[in-house]
Amino acid sequence: MRHSLNTDIKIKNRVFHVQTEDWGLEAEKIVTQVFCLGKLIKKVSIDYPNGFIDKKYLEKKISLEKIHNRILDLLKSLNETENPLY
Image (cartoon, rainbow, N blue to C red; front, side, top):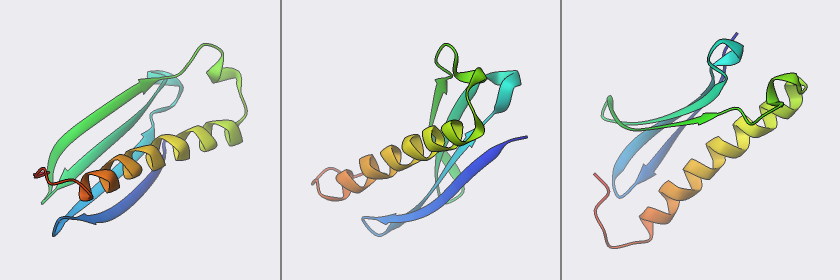
């Protein structure tokens, strides 16, 4: 079963959709995808660390949330720079 978080965030007059999913034991990874205007613009894949698959669901959920929130923080920090995002 996949678990996911989804957030829309407005940066420099554009709305970005951030989707983070735990791809489960088959893939052993957490994947975050960032979309703008329906187009995938960035994909980040993080493999489970050693021993992670033996941990409880709550620990996996916390990791999923940490990764999702870190990507949101990075996007928010771009809002404070002069560089165009997309």
